[in-house]
Image (cartoon, rainbow, N blue to C red; front, side):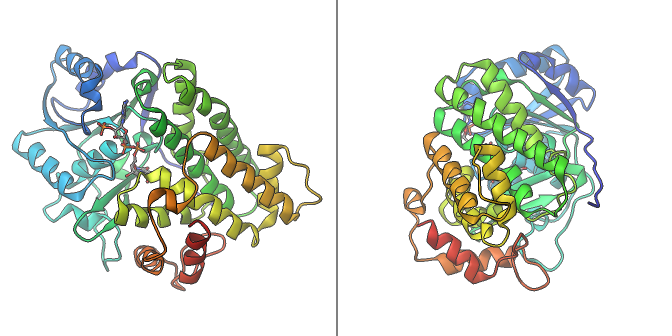
Length: 395
Ligand code: NZQ
Ligand code: ZN
């Protein structure tokens, strides 16, 4: 293991913490741009309560609403313009991962004269990696991406049909205010997708990482078991605050750098999914739920030992030895069953995706990210044919 760990985000977690928003923002600026999605925060009382807290702390604010799922670069451009026109000095993201990601890129683009799309890695020779951003305060309303406490953002370009990411230290939010009460209005399907997303964040590092990470393995298994225990409860009863709290905390630790520290692996399932979202505008974790089991079956043949460990520790399967491929595959079947039971799709046909463009998806994925051999980073690194095979097996 060889790694650095850094996460400067001040996390405030717990039911009722939304009331602290104004006081926290007043430590960062005086005029906020409040970024929101398609209206869920206004249909609940979340927006009104946030506005009241800002008002009582003397924070003025402008609004950028309408951030779409799979947030678009055109929306980022619109938000930056509002922030500049209105003289904002702090950005508040009040919503799901899409809203938070768009807000983060707006915050960095505020100080950049070029086009914000220059920051998103899409195969350009010299991406612009931002070094400065307006202070960002995230208030997640959906437990899934972990964006509230990490340095990443994922943005789509609707014109070029690309979806990709930026990673930059200036994108770490100054404060993440995670109030599980705000997630109680998330519908069943989005709750399930959130559970799938957070599990996939740790399975990517678990299966693609370097050998010899026993603590990280246990952390990851803890996140998976917690999500599998509490996720179904949150889906069954959205008002179950305890379940909502456990799922939200799991989603934060899954991608704030701690659980995956030192694993240094690729995120092949995510990279392939982003291409599918770029073409079909599907929900991120619906795509993951289809690709991940298929990718696991492909990868298990190359590294059965890790998949046997997964089968044993997550599902209690016995196995005939450390390299028992049958046991590894049974564990994957059980995982796929879990995804189906919570209502996630597991076939591309359920997403109305057929085999017409499989090669195109593979080529686009590799154009955006590849290693020195032109392969998709992961264990094993994937060729174009490998990606097509994984997608074909998921039809
Ligand atoms: O837009 P509104 O009206 O707010 O409705 C949203 C949206 O329709 C709704 N929703 C959110 N909170 C709600 C709610 N509905 C009722 N009550 C609430 N409290 O849920 C729908 C989905 O929202 P979205 O923000 O798109 O979902 P999610 O949080 O899953 O974010 C997905 C995006 O994050 C990216 C994905 O690629 C995708 O673009 N990711 C970002 C990552 C990161 N920054 O670290 C990592 C992830 O792997 C992921 O790639
Ligand atoms: Zn994800």
